[in-house]
Length: 274
Picture 1: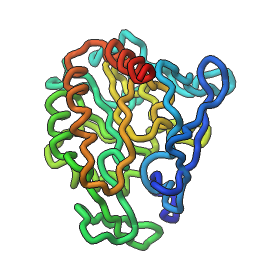
Picture 2: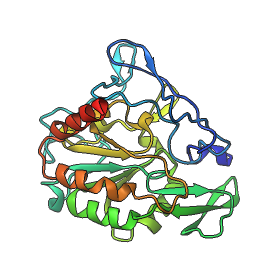
Picture 3: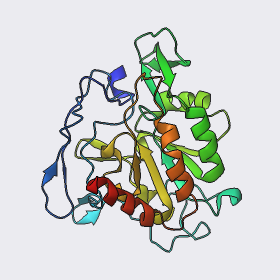
Picture 4: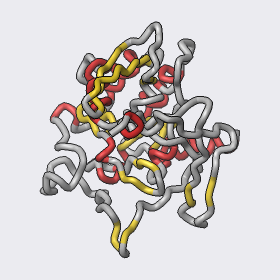
């Protein structure tokens, strides 16, 4: 296995246009503002390039031979139901999180940026073994990530969900999450591989969809559940970035809601009108 198969990651200069069919028309949408093309290390890090986000439009999960590849969570799901241990990706809700919504947070280009190329000021250096050879991965933390994670841990049941492999992402999360904010960590094997992209299918988590939020820089990741998403821009090394702080007021408001769609769909509509 070479290092192009461990981490998936976008590149600021070379990012492909991905296309996705809409649920209604089967047509494709692309993002003309932020084209993305995968580089040599693109499959080592987090997620493939994004598409243009179409609010209030959800692409149905894939089907195979007339059967869905996974069983969606029923709206009546509660943490104390009798579902089998392998039915959902997440374990039973902890007692202290029972009344909290669930927030799913991406890793690469959302919370950190990682590179095999040495940099002068890394926050972490993570050794990753590939085919018997140890490679150093240099990791930069996005500005205000510590404050963001601590606040999310107070308000939500927090889940790290990345399309990277655990051999890279798990040690990064160990160093990043000093407070034990993440109740669970999900990696590439928990994604649905659909039309060339790793999709984070929120219906497989075992939580009520109307109480799940996903924060991610790649719209490809949440194409099945676009109305659950709070998009963020891809971050690389801009130390003046404030995006994690900027989304805190909305997340604090959503934490009080029993149905996040009521607010997020309105936010999406206002964004279109603007």
